[in-house]
Length: 194
Image (cartoon, rainbow, N blue to C red):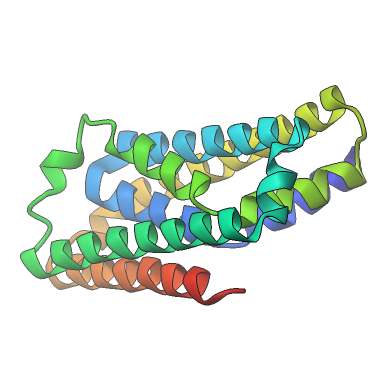
């Protein structure tokens, strides 16, 4: 279990689309929206855990057409989120109020994670190295999801603490643009992977 937790910590702490999305949504919609994004990502991982434990994720990973369809959908979704962030940067973040108090963060975190077919490959290749039965795989996946939730929530809270410095005029718009291009780059990279 210690080896699994250490490996999971390294994987979770490596920035990726989920981290970029959590930061973006925290900057745009505040602490609650950032935390909802983290929750959506964790629920997506929990669903991938169920799929991997039941063998469904292995079918997704093995089926080239299904894997490709999920990969293209995931890439398109990340690019779309990036384009929205870029539009916000150009407009000066006028849609911030729309994100507050909505389920947008949760939905975006969930969809971003579920539309990433690399999660199917990841869970089907990682979990069986540390457990064998359905219950063991499920427990390991839920540990991973819980660790992800804790890490992304900490990210959101850290961003909130520094938000006053980050949301002033040009700095705010520059951060929106950086997050936009980051999401677009993750989407393009996902689409280009074979």
